[in-house]
Length: 244
Image 1 (cartoon, rainbow, N blue to C red):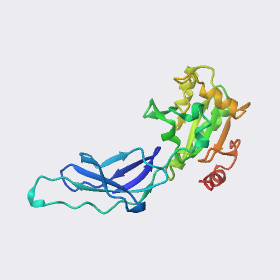
Image 2: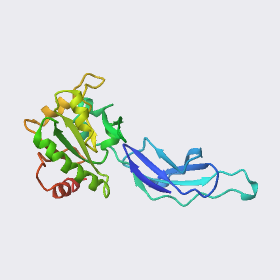
Image 3: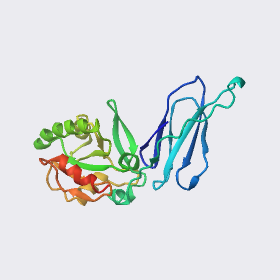
Image 4: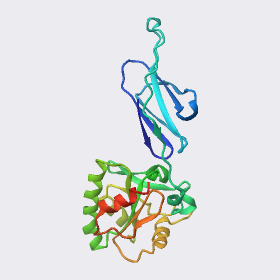
């Protein structure tokens, strides 16, 4: 199997289908000679996600097909997967959001429809760019396509960078219209379930008094660049990743 760290304290495991059977999936912690444990006894698919992992531990996975054919005997498990260490959102990055990011949601897009995803899953282990912008801002409308092209090209080779749109639009309709042109995540326009206006909180926290503004944070939540607009993003990301 191939194991990949995804989201917050989560691993994605996938394997090739060699039999028309269900599969048993096992996991173990690499350190300390931990025993293999069955985490799914009868999977129909050839991929699975294991959540609630410990970010400081290394894990391996193995799989075998289930069979009722006695002539097959006990089919052995596959060789162990590669070792994988789960990612987690750093306390420093989580503290930038109300209530330490607990339960915070970001907007993403499934094709053209907007959906929500957990902040911790979106930003675990990632360099984060906060993009303060608005549709009414001419320089913003000029810069957004440039940033989108850079982001799309970057995603083809790396998945450890995320951009979050923090809107300064005057109304939700303008926000929705502008966000349609963007390929990244966004802070919801409305207040969250606890009455926090995350957009305004972030604007105040970073003293935003002019846009476009692109604040670059490393995975620990420390500011690497106060405003990357018009600067060499490649060199900025090298600095940001050096702290991971």
